[in-house]
Image 1 (cartoon, rainbow, N blue to C red):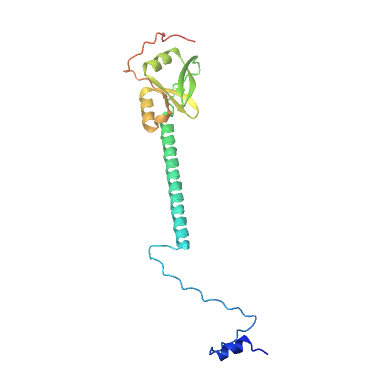
Image 2 (image 1 turned 90 degrees about the horizontal axis):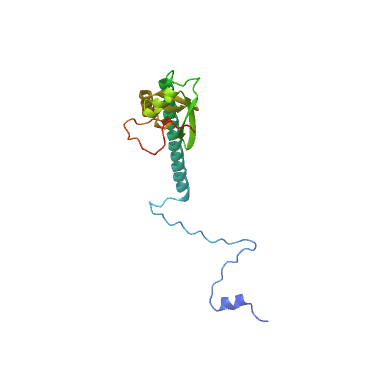
Length: 172
């Protein structure tokens, strides 16, 4: 009959190649890796750098928060020592003196003499421990130097008096 294709190719001058073994896969050779530029980090290095930067940032934020808390605690301690025994609040005070503090209208009860001294700038009001404390002007100025946010009311005696047409002694 006719010759097989293999036999015909052998007669034509082609060399016989070894027969591939059945059931065995031939895998191509992997391409060799191209060398990277020295400035280009690989993915693992990039993740490590990112993790290191995140950790440093987190530690810096924690350190700053601790420092702020320590400063606040020290200011509170100094303020407590300054105000110890210097509050002039009277138990029999019956006249309210309203003032604005932290966006709210607050009230402290004072005597008639204290009301005139507060309005004249001789006394001030400091918020400490959730209470409004009536204190002398010099103590209020020292408290303002320690923590300006606690001074709720301190009238400047040298400020010009605004004539708004409302008498100072008007009670409502």
